[in-house]
Length: 266
Image (tube, rainbow, N blue to C red):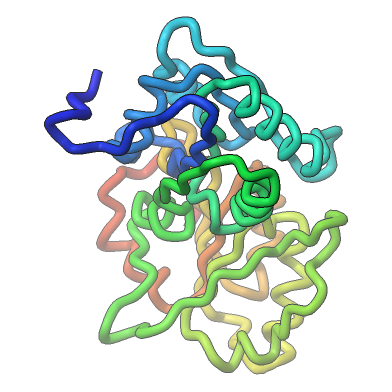
């Protein structure tokens, strides 16, 4: 139990919703506010990317509700999830909406916050460590380095309907960012690589595909942009993944502090 008074933490009041980032997997990456919310929530509505070890930290007696959305699988509709959060808050409970990574980085936190605001439900957004930073750090890959990369672009590789996202200017990204980090892009990695190469990125540029980052099941495949999709398929890499493209990937050879895991491929 966290000493919330000593830390001057915000009160989790009945009838409110907290949208909380659970980080990429390792429970040690939870924020103090996230643990505080788990200590006090009456209902925990969690998504598919929240590590089971984190769900176990909910206070005894809290109602646990799965509301995960996974590409290609039957999933709750986003309007239904938002409506459920509103209903639970209107019933007077402390409602914790627990999301993998950060709720506002490809996590639909903005959509849910807008729905809560429209329903006049008090809410708080508690940031979490997003996989594009924390997951890559556990793979020994810093997303920036002042001698290599002073900018990074985060891109979703998965559109609303499961196809490649529309409206992404891949040519501009290829020219404008030394480091590209792809979320939810495993299924479309080959097509994305083709577009980036056509826009001028080198086929030999290093790529790291990190599966189940920060967990005991973490696996990393390092390849080139041209071969990344084939290497991921050959290694039977599974989602969720975070993918880094850029020269910072080469730093992994010296910075793999998390340790080489069985099945990793270079």
